[in-house]
Length: 193
Image 1 (spheres, rainbow, N blue to C red):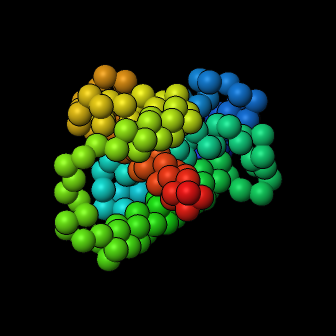
Image 2 (image 1 turned 30 degrees about the horizontal axis):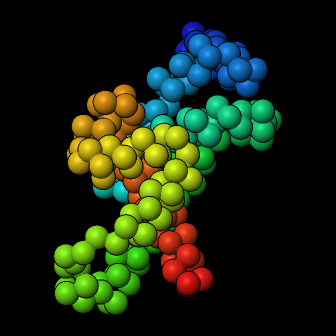
């Protein structure tokens, strides 16, 4: 490596260290810089592992939100910022794989215990409707809005994403998590009766 190349590499490393320090102190411009620089790497890792563009976008968003909210825990003496961000991304990817596995297991369980005749009903149980409405009220505001649009307004995930200006992966995550929470709470309520 020539002296000129070594000087350029040192200058580049110093510039990155300065951005890292600004990121740690909460400089939003540093967050933009770090996101522009490393989000393609995070997205590519997520896409290769998950095979779904929407999930990869969701993982990328969650990774940078996690990095930003936990930036005080980053220790530049232990790892480079990029290494730390990739470690966060790997945890978010693992979380997504686990969530998928839980949903698959739930779907399989429902298929095993549900007969086709159970899915057809002529009567509407007002008590059940009120119970579902009460459970929806217990959801966090964003999740409640998404669920109402999906189930009462009969909007597609893409339409909800556009109307709420929310990433499609986040819309899907809200629906999946909300259904899981509501199912669990409704099962507890039914077991109590």
